[in-house]
Image 1 (cartoon, helix red, strand yellow):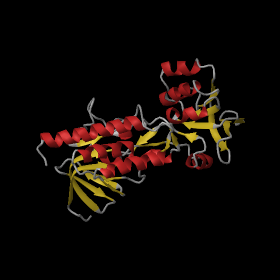
Image 2 (cartoon, rainbow, N blue to C red):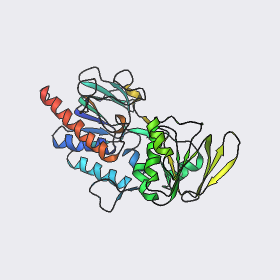
Image 3 (cartoon, one colour):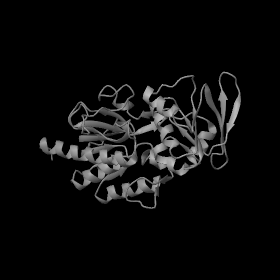
Image 4 (cartoon, rainbow, N blue to C red):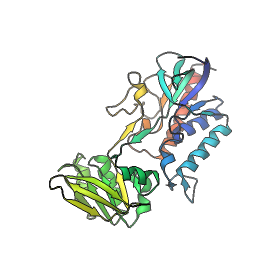
Length: 316
């Protein structure tokens, strides 16, 4: 590996609302941050069409436009936003060492991690096609459920998240079909009770998604019963997947504390990790809320924590 001997007071790994907000605050604090976008500049929201729940956009905004606005605001204050993927880190040393695209080495006094998380999908061809074309396939009921108000939808999953999102959708939608592979749910008893007590949620046990119908948008879902092999077509317009998220934290294995799912662990009420000068913000450290606005808020925390760390360490 070669080195360009570049040094940064504040290096931000990842973009999205968390990374860009951290960059805005860090730049305004004159930390002269450098931000590497990762493989998907702007993060998960670049695959989202309408965003109606981010403050400041009374008429809504598309995900890509929102990310471009945040990026422009970060750059306005002097953030260097660069395309590139961080492939290796050494966070145990001071300053921290980070490699980008396996060729560029940068040292940094503080590192803010905003690598996000990736939704798990079923892998069906039509699922991917309709998801990429904003055709009614989603991994976030709280984000997109409003667009299906009064309609019939499907949700796939059997855990707490699936149960919670099914209950949320039941308050908006006329009918919610919940597809579960086995004959039982993994969700807590309390969450199961909520689902089963909702009159407009129908649970399809021992079932899997066989196909998703529709040319431009979801027009139906074909479900296969694994015990009888019977196929059933559901007349729905929305398809929600709630089988989990995978935090993008592999490169930090063995260096930063994580939970059993790989989410980075931070000290309560802060963005501080177990290594001084390293902070985690956004969905890579949040498996509970996973919203753009909460990610942005945690990005602000990360920048403020980094600024205070540098001041207390008397690093200029």
